[in-house]
Length: 165
Image (cartoon, rainbow, N blue to C red):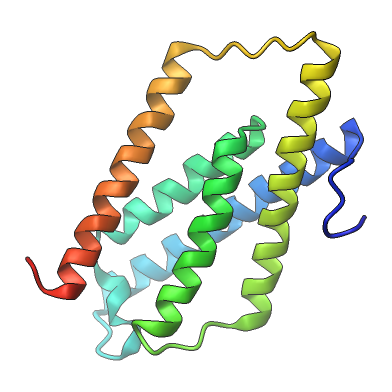
């Protein structure tokens, strides 16, 4: 498998999507453990930023994106990849922490493969099913609400960092 191979067959696309979903679930589980430990022990070092219960929204977002990738949602795959990349950059710059580069690259690889897998899978399915692209209204409402909440929390976080609040 090449890194930028966009012509995946059906089984490779499914495998790449499921691998990205599993990586999202692993990341959300590890984040849940870290946030719970930080809340319980009240660390007073550079990891004290994780003792905020608002971080549970981050974990929920990762898990929901994992579910979306599991069901071959292109939006969820791109959101997962972009969110993880931006969060690594934010932790590096704003907090002065040096995130583990190897772990970050591994997760980014799986999330990138998820983007490739979901796009390839949807392209293959749409070619074989004569372009049937109907989504249920509940699926659209769910992802619209998740997107709006994510934007609100990002703007709120930026406002807190800048000092507006």
